[in-house]
Amino acid sequence: MKRLLVLLFTLLAAITGGEDRVVLIEGRSGDMSQQQSDRGRFDELSAVLKRLGFAPETIRRPTGGKPELAAALTREPLQDGDELWVFLSGRVQIGRNRIYCFLPQGVIDAATLRGLLDRAGGKQLIFLLTGNGVELMNLLRGPNRTIVAFAQPSQPDAPPHWGGALVRELSAGEAVNWCDLLRRATLCNQKNAEANHIMINELPQMAVEMNALDYPILTPDESKLPRFRRAAPLKPVELTDGTRIECVISSTGAMRECVEVTLTVPEKAEPFRSFALFRPGAVRHEVERLHATGVDGAPLQVEFNAATGTVAIPKAAPGCRISWRYTMATDDGGDRFGGVNRVIGLARAFEQSRLEFSLTIPDDLAVYFKFYNLEPTPKIQETRSADGKRFAFTTGAIPALPGGAKNPAIRPTLPLLAISTAGSYEEILAGFMPLLAGADAVDAKCEREVRSWVDRSASPSEVLETLYKRINALEYRTYVNGLRSVRPRLPGEMLRSGWGDCKDKANALIALAGLFGIRGEFVLLNRGSWTDPEFPGWRFNHALAYFPEVDGGLWLDATDPETPFGSLPPGDAGRAGLVVKPGRAVFRTVEAAR
Image 1 (cartoon, rainbow, N blue to C red):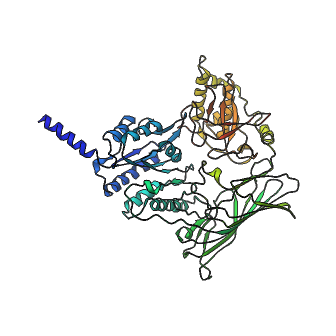
Image 2 (image 1 turned 135 degrees about the vertical axis):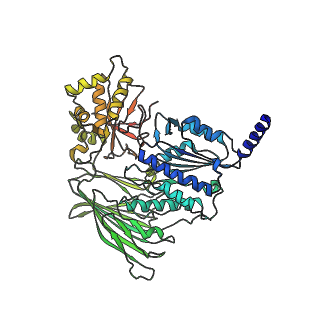
Image 3 (image 1 turned 180 degrees about the horizontal axis):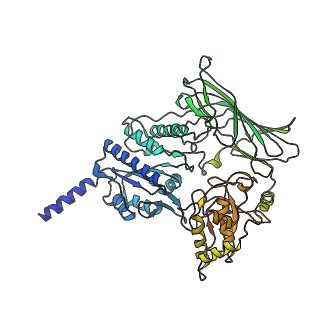
């Protein structure tokens, strides 16, 4: 009897080993409410997958750590024709040259996860419903693996509904291809964002295999899609338009910019029935003209919400013409030092047959320009105006904005115009360094407390780990107004308040490490984006600390309590950081610890 049971179990394993399988990885997100939301979404997803034909016993939801996940992925190897679907949600962290995924119990590095997927075999479809999905996607690539990556927005109040929209699209049971499914899920997410007054695009965004600007989705190659697809691919959308941008900057940095666009609604008219002209915020906007006409030239109803910047044209149809003109005004031209720093994105979500850009500045300002990814170089004409020198730039055709334009890996390839009144990065440092003077002073009470944290026999690395853990445990709170937006608070003041922003924490790490003879450097960088070391301008939104003599060079960013010592939060690694010190401007590439 026992032998018969063993034989029966072996036969059952052989049969089930060839079935399509799903593994749902509900990672820890660091936010209890988000974890509960993920759990509810995965409950929905389990039911949807059963309706798609997956047997209940083939849907695995490991609730433990790495051993349980390994067993779920590799217990029964898949055959070449079988499929493995993996859904991963939760938190992904870029660390010491590795990417970590936080499991319900413990963590797993992405290289180990890739090894498990390689062992699992079969044809694989991986959904990364998580932050840093693009980085994880690049590491998990494989010959038999199709990856759909979703990069969650960084704003804590942004609605990450893409996964929920995907569940609804899957559960609809309609015959759709995957590109169409992802596009519809993205548009659904856009509507959710707009309902919460959060704009995820500043101009109409529509393209096949699209990447919504702040929610980049990398859709799979048609040739690698799994068999759960039926419909034909979507047709690309191509538009031509006339776009003009006028920018007037005063000698104090105050700026007024005017944008005028006219376009023809394409064959796929749905996205243009509701879109956003601009993103609400500190910049003041005023719409001067907004109208639409039908194919017959008759005016169409246009509804504009000034609070959210959204436009609705209920009866927009292919061939309609939409035209708008609006101005943006700000008291700060870009670098807070009375100069000018602007990076103008010349690409739009539709092909442009012609673009005109004009800039007017006071006579007493020197101005520098640099074009990126524009062939041929635009024509530039300098004239006089009542407000000063006027520069007019005219370009020929510019291709449509590619998907994922906010992805740092893609953004440097876009057509851009950079404008700056800084002649060198040394000039920028000369204006910034006086704001740091004295900010590293440590009062006696603060010094006594800090010295009590550290063992006298501790190595420099151990000292920094202690300081890092203490400072990283403080609440991270940004402060963007006035002088406080660029000058750090004193370390003692920050510790007693219980909170700090990036420059407060970087400054404190360096100042407190100095009490123990450890030299640190204050570094500026553009987190999540890029800085051109060859073209000076204030393109920085973040600060962190670098300790060149510890562990071969150690970068510390104490703004994320989930980040272990020696690791880096998302958006730091690979950026060019400007070291703040007198003399020649030096850039260092930010790297995860070795």
